[in-house]
Image (cartoon, rainbow, N blue to C red; front, side):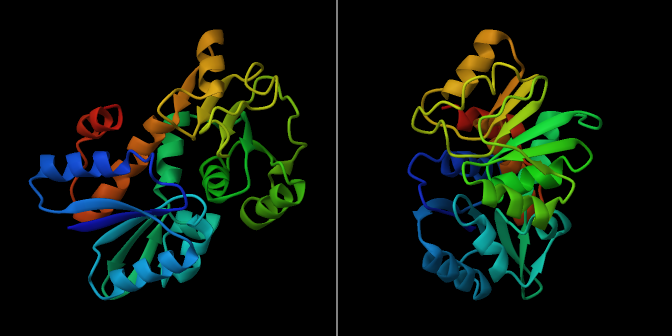
Length: 253
């Protein structure tokens, strides 16, 4: 199998290690490589999928929304969020999925009746809006107009709030890149949270994750969410259930 990750900044990604381990465990011959690309590179990969030169692709920041525009068909969650992170061909049709949604739901557990604060306005934030549609969702971005726009497009019931505003007891979903290079979230946002899902990951734990852990706040890091979405992508590409423990071990090597 020929699989690829498409993104703007992918040198740090654990996806190649995760999927290489999954392929080996399943006895499948193939490779999973990472490409740092602009939008033209995403278009080129879509063309490779259409002619059979690639068997599947993952898409990460900042191209999830753009990749959705290249698909002939979107699954339900991808259509709602207008963003995809997984591509494959089905009967001559390029299909896009958003397995981030599945992973976020698994990470959060039951959210009905809870307040969820989504930070960000890109493809990962769109996935969070779709995943937590049955919660009381607030959304904040450093560009307020972007938060308002994504809420209107994906989940009109989501309420845009100012960046940095503290919402005591909320489940905070950090769907921004903040933390990848040691950047903190605004003061108080994590400290007053009831739980944190921190999507960025780096060789060292992010400041948000360290703060949550120090305070005893339940926290799911970006690697665990990555494992969850990778398992679903693997199933889409191969038709096989993913060896989750193998994927998790590879993510943390």
